[in-house]
Image (cartoon, rainbow, N blue to C red; front, side):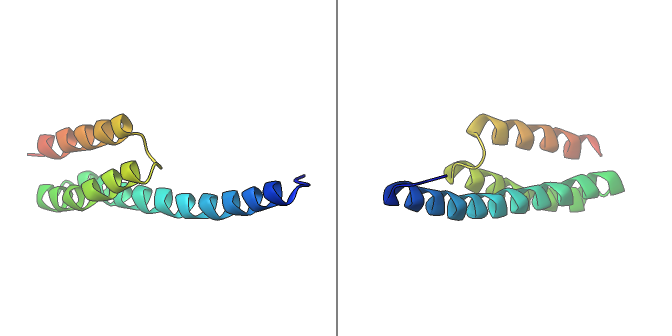
Length: 87
C-alpha cells in the first residue's frame, strides 16, 4: 500500500486514468462490434458505414495511447477486407 503522499497521489491518478482508458477501450469495442454485426448481416452498405464510423474511433484510441498504432491499422485493414468481400 502507498505510504508517502506522493505515492498516494500517484495511486489516485492511476485509478482515474484507468477509468478513462477503460471507457475509451469499451467505446472502441462497441464500434467494432457494430461493424462485426453489419458484416454478419450481409449488408455491405451498413458494414461500410459502420467501418467508416469505427475508423476514427480506433485512431483516436491510438492518439490517446489506449491502442497501439499497428494494432489499429491491422484491425481496420482486416475489417475493410471483410466488408469488401461481402460484394
